[in-house]
Image (cartoon, rainbow, N blue to C red; front, side, top):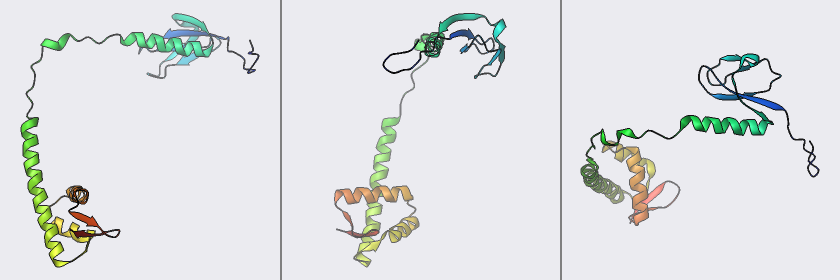
Length: 167
């Protein structure tokens, strides 16, 4: 059958839809094929011996029918365990307060480090900040985080590509 406007011929060939006997995945195959290999488990099925679930016309309808059958396999989840488990208490609030206190102490230490650099130099390069931070046991991720934060707050200003000054 040919569509008048586009000139595309519609696929009217028959396709067999069957279920893999090993992994139970649905697949489609042309009746003229001799064998079909399951893409999921690798088992080879002989077309003449298949238990056909459905027969459709056209590849698009075959693909859609396989998707539809696969979706019926999953079904609705069984939520029987709602009262069988105890609720774990969260310590996130306590840990968050500790992290905030620890972060503010680290921030003060990092500011002192920048202040010491600013007393020695009017502008200082990034590698000096890294060296001083490594001596003070700072992580490089923390250094970058604090640099961005201090620039955003207006405490620190980036002059050239890698030079900074404390305001």
